[in-house]
Image 1 (tube, rainbow, N blue to C red):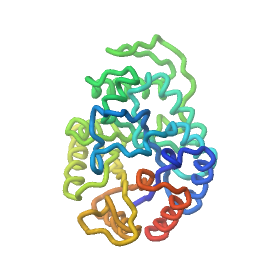
Image 2 (cartoon, helix red, strand yellow):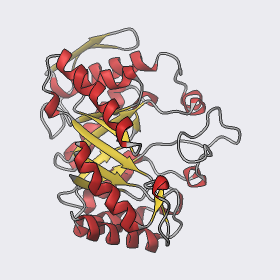
Image 3 (cartoon, rainbow, N blue to C red):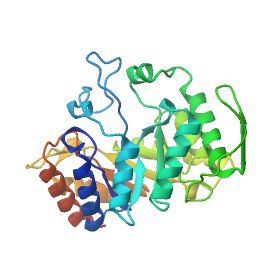
Image 4 (spheres, helix red, strand yellow):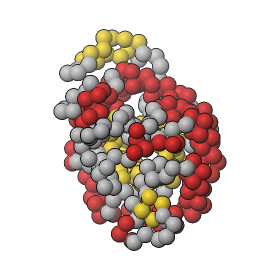
Length: 304
C-alpha cells in the first residue's frame, strides 16, 4: 500500500513558502503522494453540519489555499511524488475552464496528477458559487463527459443539457494519455455505482472496516456490470486524525491516537484491499514544525 500526506494548504499552513518547502521535504521523506482539498468559505450559520468529528466545521477552514495552486507549488518543488485532489469540488467551475486548469497542472508536473472529484456537503458553498445544489449527479456526469472529450478529442464538440461547445480545436492536452486518472468520492449507492462504471478509483475515508469493504464491493460489482475490470480500480482512503501524546482508546482510532496507533491502523488497511492511504493532520495541528514532525515520525513507522 502506498502512503501519502496532505499538502499544507489551510489554517496556519496556507503559506506558499511553507507549501514549497514542505512538499520537497515530504517527497524526500519517502511519501508517495501529496493531496489537496477544496473549501471556499465557512458560513457563520452553516446550512449543513460538517460530516466528520463533532459536526462543527474546523476553524482552520476559514483560511484555505486554492487546491490547484497548492499542487502547482508542490509540482515545481518536487520531481516524482504523485499529486492528487481529495477532493476537488469540480461543479463550481465550468468544465471547459476546469479541464484546461487540470491539463495545465498535469503538464507542469510531467504527468503526476490524480484528479479526485467530489460533490461536497455544504449547500452554502454551492449558493456562493452560483451552482444549483439539486441535480449534482447529472451535472457531474456531464462534467466528466465534457472534460474527457476536451482532453482526448482532436476536434471537441459537445451539446448537452447544461453546456454546448461548438466544433473546436482545444490542443492543450494532459501529459498523461488519454487523461489523468479520475477518482471519485461519495458514499451513496449512486456514487459508488458511478465509481465502478466510469472512474479509475474511489476516494474513501477512514471508517469501520466492514463498512469500508461493503461500499467498495458496490463499486466493484458496478464495474463488472459495466464490463470493466474491477481489479483495475484503486481504493484510496483519507485519514484525518487528532494526534495524541498518550494512547487513545481503541474505538477512537484512527480519529484520534498516537502516531504509533495511526501507523498500525494504516498498516492494517492493506488487509482490506486498500491501495493507498493519506493522512491530513491540519484540522487539529497549529504548528508548521509539528506538522513536519508528525510526517517524519509516521513515515518512519510505515515506510515510503
